[in-house]
Amino acid sequence: MAKPNAEQSMLLNELRDFVLEVMREMPEWVGANVELLSTIQLGVLRKNATQRHGVTRWRRGVDVNDLKPGDVDVIDLHPELLVSEWKAYSAFVLHHEYIHAFGLRAHDSSFRSLEASWPGSKAGQQGIKFTEALRRKRASWLWCCSKCGREYPRQKPSNGGYRCRTCDMKLIDRKITTLT
Image 1 (tube, rainbow, N blue to C red):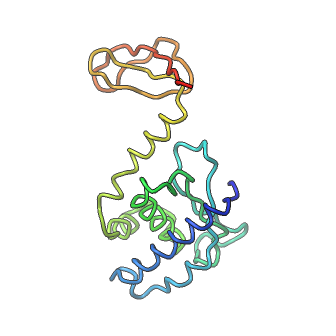
Image 2 (image 1 turned 135 degrees about the vertical axis):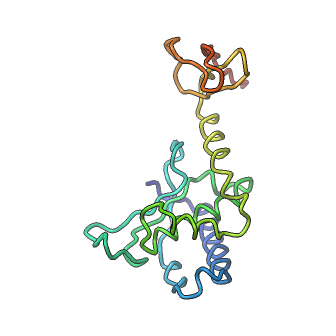
């Protein structure tokens, strides 16, 4: 967990206000006290995280069988989500974390149903693109397929034993050179 700077805090507060406003209008949240979510602190993940886009962190010692928004210590989002390019996806991710804050820890069918109710269904499909963008940003190497052209961004060169997931061709290392 990293501490958000002043700009990130402002953007997180704007995002929170937007997501809560949308949730108040959603029929799925009519019986829930959505206002409780506004008391949850928002933070940022480390910028080098590539797999997690958001995380709900619970206070120590809470009963995992009776979770509620007051038991959440902080919800952290990836700092790259605060860039305007990912605005729609960041709202989706925060909604996802708010579902967890209401005590639904497992990604089961009831969780997925609530998650899918978020307006703008395309926002939820941006997760793969976001992960790919994070990996490419940190990559020093590309493992490339000479047959299908697929590229796998990596931080280290391979040992020559990796094959393409699509066409099973041996991958070739290519060093990414940055222009300075």
